[in-house]
Image 1 (tube, protein in one colour):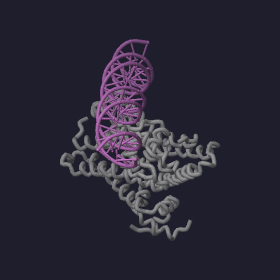
Image 2 (image 1 turned 120 degrees about the vertical axis):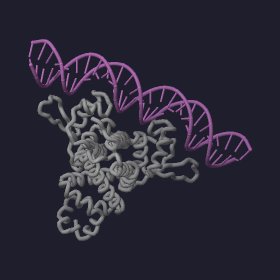
Image 3 (image 1 turned 90 degrees about the vertical axis):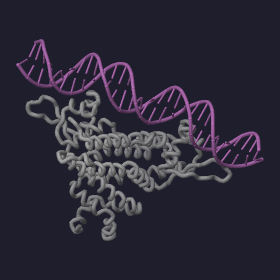
Image 4 (image 1 turned 45 degrees about the vertical axis):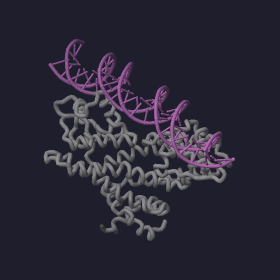
Length: 176
Length: 176
DNA sequence: CAGTAATTTCTGTATTTACAGAAATTTTAA
DNA sequence: TTAAAATTTCTGTAAATACAGAAATTACTG
């Protein structure tokens, strides 16, 4: 597959962006490629389009499947696996948020809870104790809120965001 | 400084957490240390408490200052710089969000805009064009919303989050 | 304006991560 | 049930990153 310059720019940038957020560059690039073209693509074609090793593509595709970001598609008369991702950018966004929350956020909440219930947390560490509590409270708030937001339909979520800071004015009339 | 086991656990976990999100481990650990103890600490003491090289601490402290997460404090009768961070976990959270948005999010929006205005974006790439548009729209929405949320007082932001999905019911009565 | 404390920058090494290519395995179709 | 295709796993290398220790610089004190 020949990529036009714009597609290239998008894919390369996405790869760099991924790196800054702890996602492997090739993984990001492959996902960008699948998202951008929309067509299910076999591994070989990804390999030559991005110019990386076949094994690298294989591992990255597995990683993307573990993240629930891509799925296998079969094409009639072609025995190769083809890979595709959702064309709904909101769905993709929500998937990434959900996965990262489960893998990285929730376990941290667990650690903080362990910290607070630990017998080692003596009375002499009042500041330490308080700050761990505060941190836990923040993360629990974010987690709960995140779960609720993830349940909303993309369209509803959009409306919520559009409402933005105007929500402030609604707050005064909402007790609780 | 001798760290009790709980503080150690917190700091070590924070370091690992940072790594997964693209933040250097030592940088995360130093910030966790400063946050947890609450006292301004000189570089030397950070060095021996965490068991890393002095130069590493120096560079990490500079990095944390670039992120507006720590500041220098002077102690009477001591010529060394002492370093401290906010004890308000919400303020810290907001700082991180603001910085990452500016450094990584906003530039991506710029790239996407470049993509869309590029002459290379021929008419034959209808899907590519549409998907870049969708991506840009999502990121602009998030960016605008983020700016608004960052303007709110921590206490207000808390209320907004507590409201959570109940905001849905308020939406129907809010036209726009 | 020495002399020392404090800090930063530089340089090389170690560790980690990413990745290519080979080998092995699995799958598919005749 | 065998040959080819497709895919994965393994192994070693390359690249990137993190980091220690030395050297250089800056800031402070008498």
